[in-house]
Image: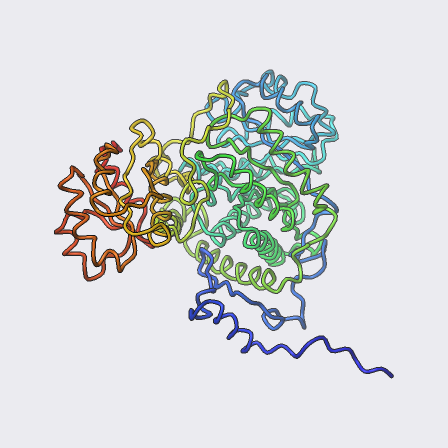
Length: 612
């Protein structure tokens, strides 16, 4: 018998960690450890021992507890349509159906302010003209108008075998978005669902929408927990009107918003299915009835107006997470959604993103491609535990409705949002094209100017706000755009010496829409620097150099710049013990890594005379 083949020496984790720390140039292993927005630790390395393998809680694909997904084959491509004019909505629908979209998400607002102006059967007929309803199932997103819209669609579908229809009545979602709910709303939704269950058993009547939590800046566990709590309310209401727990479970579906962090979002979908299976198990549902039907949307809070083309990358990664996370239905945003209505090109990019993932990446041909990853498996369970505990807290408040009416849930989400906004403001978390690598003067992509939907305004009292992470920075850019401010770079020493801080500062200024004058120019002496400043016409100067050069020349340079007419002098770097001396010499501001960038740029805008 031949000897077994040994490939290298046995791995020693301690030795490997030591080599990693050597590569970190003295920094410790902990530097590589991160945390999710829920405080779950993200290790740089996972081992088999991180996941219990003796009892595989994930099960098999297509079987309870459905952690590994319930769909058979690829997901359904369902795009959203919301042009206020029903005729233009119909034209967009027909164009996308011809381009490979398989289902329709019809966003309705009878007033035409937030969606298609559909308030009666005639308008619905216009929006869905020439659509083969058996082949392209309709899903509704009608907010407070959901029940009347569902009744309109129900009447239109009589006699039609429309499997995959989703009426999406969701009074709890309306409460989250609008801050109001009546005592009869949930009961009326349940009565409609019971009727729809008899007439269209292949349809879902209720939507459990966690997107308001996502778009308000909530954490992954908060999204799952509110979805679970909303689902519990609907299960009770549905069984109260006579449905069995199996029929009640088959009448509901989830809507979830996803961001660009692929593996965290993948784990979120898997954790939601695990938790929902536990809810249905406790409710008495048979194992085969415990699957969560999930419609995943690429989230709006990650989209940017500045450098909007980078949204294509964000949308693609979010859709990738939805696909490998086992979403049954996926809707991809248009990359111009933060700017205005989509053009045919924007809609084409959105739908083709899914086609590439489905057909070229073949993600729909593999069940649970992330399954077995020690990281994803552990994060799935940690997220499920966090969400379950939070769901129990919501139930202790009296349930999701009571938690929203008291403001308890809004406060919890607000704390998470503030923490995330602080991380972005200090650039511990970055937004490409906005907080990092901003491109001044870039031409914005075209939008459909006939789409006059109103942007999201101030949230009504007791409602969850709709935010975008990039918005505070974009306001800075917008304020600076008309003024076109610029700052003179007073570079000390040579380019290799001042270059790193000059590059950092140039990027920082661009975040606030401020142009840089001669950021790579070096000067033979202070006299030459002062002459160049005077010739530039600038009123604000920024000193860059090394700490050693600052020690010898910063004081003199600041005094000379102020004498030459500088109204404001900024120095790139931490002042340390020299702060008082340099401020006395004329330095007004210090910029360095780790600061609140929004605050510092607002200060600089004021110095430049840019109105906020």
